[in-house]
Image (cartoon, rainbow, N blue to C red; front, side):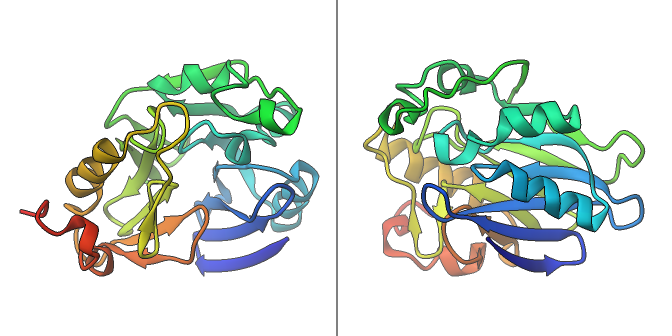
Length: 221
């Protein structure tokens, strides 16, 4: 497991049980309360990171419901008493091992007590409403795919919607390439050009850099 500080509010931890997946702690610097995004494996190690850093995790946020993003959720939910949040189409993935692909690894993961959120929902900390993320629905990799955006900090956690110089697969349940490309253009590439895009399976990138990719040309306004 590798740790990397993106800045003083964001800690990236890469877990590797299934395939390398970037898990993000998005933490309020003063209170040490915050969110964890896409805890896809290695719950014990993630709990240790939080304990060692003094983090209090209020909410577990999911960019989509594939097993490599949700496998550690139930254990962390029980340990921390944290609310689990995902886009409202996520019910198909949270409750169906065939759709979340966990049936392919013989684990049959099912999530319980999930809060399903609509497009543009704003997620905040209890004691600091300025520490917040806006859910941007970006389907195409999955029907529930989304990014979590903070305009003030100029960051977006984009899951598998966008990778550096690439984008998520669309050949799995709920996937559609045309939908994904159009939604990336409409919801991600309309953000300020300097916005930092933090992906689940690649190094970080920016809106400005991704706008140069040939698959978006002709779609950009």
